[in-house]
Length: 106
Image (cartoon, rainbow, N blue to C red; front, side, top):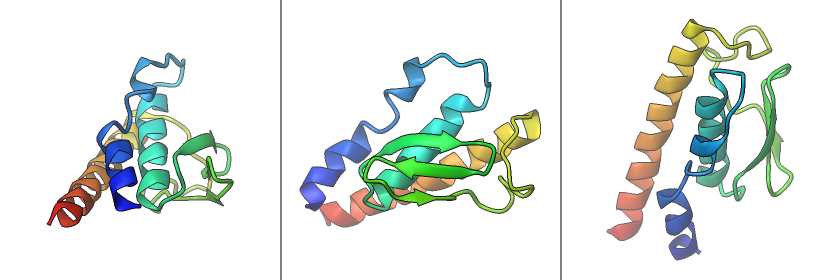
């Protein structure tokens, strides 16, 4: 099973980089959501709802994976501050992904 997950981790995020959206946080938000779903073995992201900070993964799992600092008001409205917090959270997820991949290779 782990062997099947590693290629998915390694190509994570390529889809969202080509998507255009008027929301300047979309690419980072989608990348975080997709990575969170994959790290937690929920296949990948299907949708997100910024009005209540929820993410639906492709396997049907629906969660709010955002740390309190990212979604403190119960909704995720893009601003420079939120974008910076999302970027930090994405870096944390990327670190976690890297550690999982290194652990699997060991």
